[in-house]
Image 1 (tube, rainbow, N blue to C red):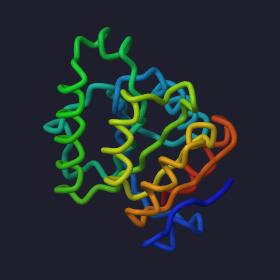
Image 2 (tube, rainbow, N blue to C red; image 1 turned 180 degrees about the horizontal axis):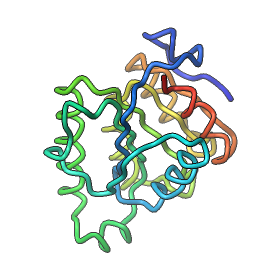
Image 3 (spheres, one colour; image 1 turned 60 degrees about the vertical axis):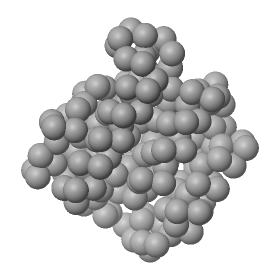
Image 4 (tube, rainbow, N blue to C red; image 1 turned 120 degrees about the horizontal axis):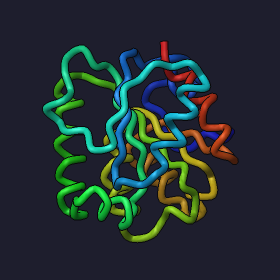
Length: 175
């Protein structure tokens, strides 16, 4: 695991738990990658609720952490009947509501280089600066996009070599 970006919160960069439960999991870009995060959370026995198309009005003061699984998929958007613009608006409203509620936000990208491109990059450029912590499979950061966004926004970011390694920093984030 590598650390990227400049941490404002030393707890996150030191692997000390900073996020609370309950956890809400959603997609930003409608990729199937949300399913991989479901598996990792279940394996770590971390309780969560998931809704790939979660709307801002579904969040409540009881929710403490929002996990955003970032990855644009034209197939996923099409299957959900959502335009790229509508997905971005949904994501923006969701993040705004999470901030208003004082929730922690963890952004995760597990799709690697294959899940990059202009569609995903638009969602990445939006979501990463809004997060409190970012976890990325390093193959997805070959161009330094995540590293640079995290550094510029002073957000702690962990790079891991494989999807299976995402579970450790994700689990460590929770109290």
